[in-house]
Amino acid sequence: SDTSRVAATGCLVHSNKDILTEDLAHLQADVIQATGITEGSGFSVAPNTGALRLRDPFQALAMPSVAACTAVPAARRYRTGTTTLPAGLHCDHIIVERTAVVRLGAGDHVFRGRLIVQGDAAVEGEDVALIFMNRQGDADFNGNARVNLSGRRTGPYAGFVMIMERGTSRGINIRSGKVDRLLGTVYASHGAVRVSAAGNVAEESDWSVVVANRLHMEGAPTLVINTRYEGSPVPVPGGVGSNLPGTLRLVQ
Image (cartoon, rainbow, N blue to C red; front, side, top):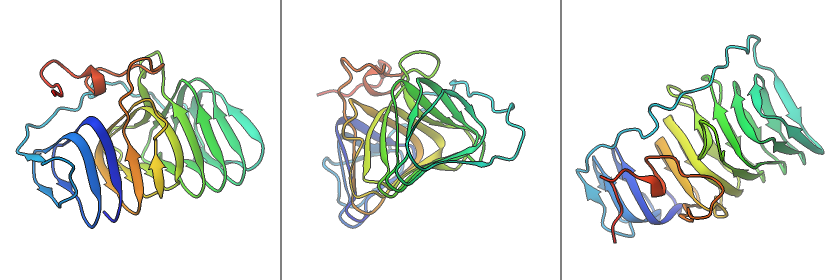
């Protein structure tokens, strides 16, 4: 809605339900299709309706356990300086604020609670997967928060940069205009990806893939979906992007 925009040149945008554009919103892609209806005029190509439903390409992806977290999650706040947060299980809410910089160590970061980055703070990491478990877990990037994340290169979560546990309706909220890089796959099969920042989002990513229950954009953001797969240090998971099954290919 509003003046939001998805810039997904060279991509397929598919919905297992509907695609709705309102106001001056615009969806740019090579192929746009929905199993249900498409509504609005903000499409770069004529959208197709009545498409076949696509299966969740990651339905067999195993989720980590947070059973080791037994206490009620507390709030761990980072307000100044630069801190390196090692990969592993984070049982508490992580709040990065004011001018703090949190560098995520390479590996899998499993959050039982929330990750909030706000103010003029920053979160960055190379070769990382952020996995949000439990119904309390989600990600919220707001204010002037700077986000620069590159997904996992090896292991069971290779190709992913953010994952929401199945069954949770919480999501990933991008309300900062300084989310420059989300290199990899964002997977929220039951949750939402909400983008309301002003400016370009993820434009510095070699490539991005979003698989979500809902994609909701409002305000004046531009979500940039790049397709520079070749030469990227982050591999593309099977079933999406340049690694589609043989029965589903974008053709010229």
